[in-house]
Length: 346
Image 1 (tube, rainbow, N blue to C red):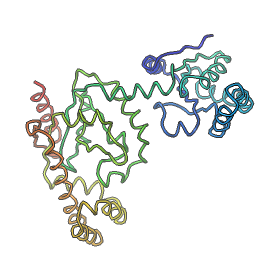
Image 2: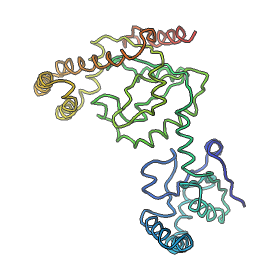
Image 3: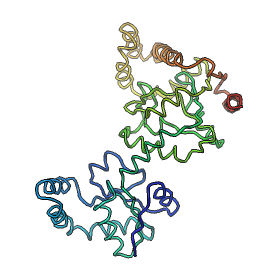
Image 4: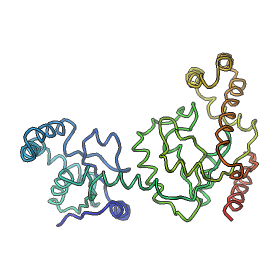
């Protein structure tokens, strides 16, 4: 039974069609940095083995390194095969390593000996990363959903998605809500490379002829950076701006963040001390200590509103279509947003 070798686009397409198990044969360290989403780590060489064999390769050459590799890994073959069988069952197995070379080929040879169907990624994870970066270079028909902090942009994106609009929730992928308080209640942020992989996978499923909704974001979402070319498209896109009252925004923010301890809120508030200014910072912390969250939020929101307004100055005024939105009747607001989309695209 021969091993099937596919280029990256066919590899990704067929893996989904066949619902195959995806196995990453790189070392644990390589996998921790980033992987193809959905992959399971099954390193042929662990971190220690990879270091030993790399040293031998440099000092004694390829043949000596290969012999040492089989000496180290050979006794573990039965364990790896059992793991593959447990993972895959009756499913096909798709495999990749860094360059589509020895590690994935050896693992494929072993799996094929058990009579299982195996597909290799041509040129390995390196070709996948080239594919990822290419997704950010493509042109998209982006429409930005804007609105000041607390407007509920993420929830509206979800409502648009439920109406079959194309959306990508960048904050969900980044595990961060975008502000200094954006980590609260969120899982740990992914590494930059894995965020890019996740984003590229979503972009690849977008119909480029149709509108793609993205939230109005800064270049950085916590520790994550939006890829440069995609961000440039976002900054040049037109904006449907949600106008939500300060009262509603405050109410929504307090319901979301008021559940956290004063200590946590204080820690996050201190992160914006330089931008907030000494006096404002002092008053904000005093209100927190008094458990007066409304007064604390008034100071914080004033800072965020000014920052958001300044950021919008970098866009052409003609690029904005403003929509009055109230959470007392969100469905009406969503219909207004869709009408604004029609106005912009016609």
